[in-house]
Image (cartoon, rainbow, N blue to C red):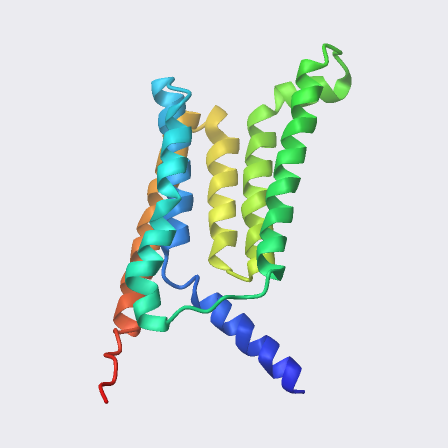
Length: 194
């Protein structure tokens, strides 16, 4: 019973660390950077943004979240789940690459080429959906839907670059609202002096 209570406490604390909105803003920044990369035709732009953007959660958490909540080191299981998601997305990308680079013109390859934006939207949206399920952060399901629709509908509505920028900006704005709520609900507790 105690072990179960400890697991529930750890799960609730882990979820609390996602209530600050910093990871949301990073996801949004990634979408904006991919959109700008496509619009401006600068292949390196997404790499720069994603490399620099990873500091948003770490700096934000160290300056805003940890002073309000403290720092707890969690078990490796959550990190392992996220690693599996990232590995699965990478593996799917490699498989898709070999489908396109293989030179064969099978029905699957023709389908993938014809529906490439749907496939990309499914992979990116699916990765966010898996992250939402593994991390139990329900708003990531909304982000998964936004990414899927933004990418998949680019043939008919707007352009891929513009759609990704709009989706990214929406996610960043949602992250900012979440951060504002987090700061309001979790004031810094002054240290007790003895």
